[in-house]
Figure 1 (cartoon, rainbow, N blue to C red):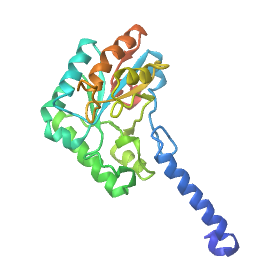
Figure 2 (figure 1 turned 120 degrees about the vertical axis):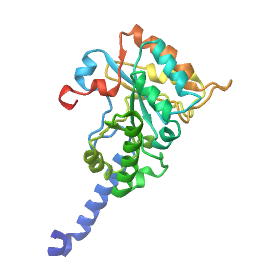
Figure 3 (figure 1 turned 60 degrees about the horizontal axis):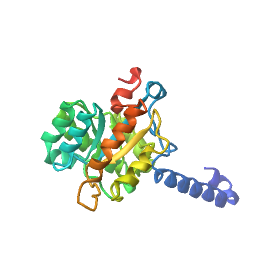
Figure 4 (figure 1 turned 90 degrees about the vertical axis):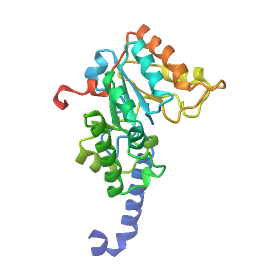
Length: 248
């Protein structure tokens, strides 16, 4: 309206709109940014004060890797949050059930993990998230409370959809890039550098890189990671365990 009433300022209005659009676009392409909506990059303070961390595992379930991951977590008495792709969960429902049965959390990582997820419009986001919600809930009997965007990328249209579905966006505090880095020592070093209470760690049981000998990197990284956490008196919990009581 202002630009119409005073045509002489319309170029400045256009510049302001363009700058705002660019800022929001950049914010959406920055996984840990909270400018386009609430985003957990670490656990709530109450959880951190209890020495808790969260290990989150993306892109599964995977029949070759997920069972071994579950066995390692059991061995160390650790709990994790699995951000599962809906199509993978539909393909391997027994794995999703096993994740939940062993006391871990199954959360929403979209239905198809689309490469163009950050370019979707509201209807596209709603379709992707709703399909995954229904798929995961029908398998485990528990409706996901958290969502992680594919590669952590999204745009400002996602936040209203998350609010509508009652989902909390989660990114991470630190990641080891274990989908591309084949050296477990490098991945582990990235995860352990400055590790502290409240951190959210990102690993992958789907799309996992493999060592030179063909072992999924996550299987080499988890034992020393969990040992280091225990030595530092840090307790891995699910994101649901870290939710404030008022949100449960």
